[in-house]
Image 1 (cartoon, rainbow, N blue to C red):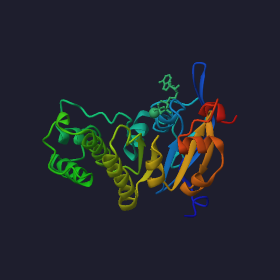
Image 2: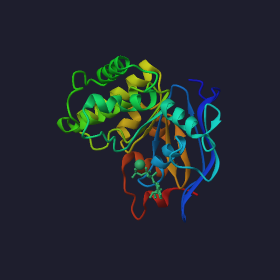
Image 3: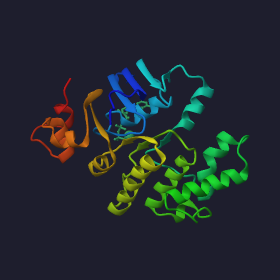
Image 4: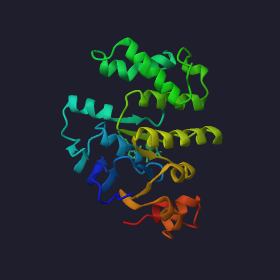
Length: 263
Ligand SMILES: Nc1ncnc2c1ncn2[C@@H]1O[C@H](COP(=O)(O)OP(=O)(O)OP(=O)(O)O)[C@@H](O)[C@H]1O
Ligand SMILES: [Mg+2]
């Protein structure tokens, strides 16, 4: 893929973000190219979720620029932001479903909220069924979330995201807490969603198996910036101690990931 020649669909440039005294980003530069899957790695608390939330305007940034299709997120109006959140769907870390609603109503929720005046009930129902089938949950529409396993709940959350037919999906820890079989199932879904639907994907994960399996490129955060970015093969090969420690889950005597990170 001639990635560097292509124009990025998403671009972070010199982004700075602090909460009070706590500096989360100190010059973040990231490009996401159309159609690729980019995974984002880094220790807990380094700012992975904040990166996704800044991108869809849930959290503002202090300096720098974040653009989607060339448009700056920080200055978007409420209407622009609501449109942005249809084109960029965020699969939240908790992937929380509404417990008091059926699976069908959960998956339809975003559609009803955003397209109440343009989509008929039948069109919504058809979209919900298609989305449930895509994640292997056909026929579960009338079930309640409490009746689903953890793996099925994650997939129902993914169906809710797919129902909006976004250009980009941001997956925040899509496999955390799942057993290996359900993890493999989600990994396979992330791949087919990219390949068959052409959806650009950003996958935040602690799971190196997921990262190596689904990514075209991988990015490692460290001390408020991008520490390393490359293909899965480059991640396998690099001798960078911070990346190695993370990839291999190694504890290096007397060090922590934070102390290994440069800057
Ligand atoms: N709304 C907020 N107000 C204040 N501090 C926040 C807010 N959101 C995040 N933070 C802080 O920003 C830092 C980065 O948080 P973030 O949730 O992005 O971490 P993360 O990399 O996603 O971690 P994890 O892997 O545990 O999900 C943390 O120190 C967190 O406490
Ligand atoms: Mg997080």
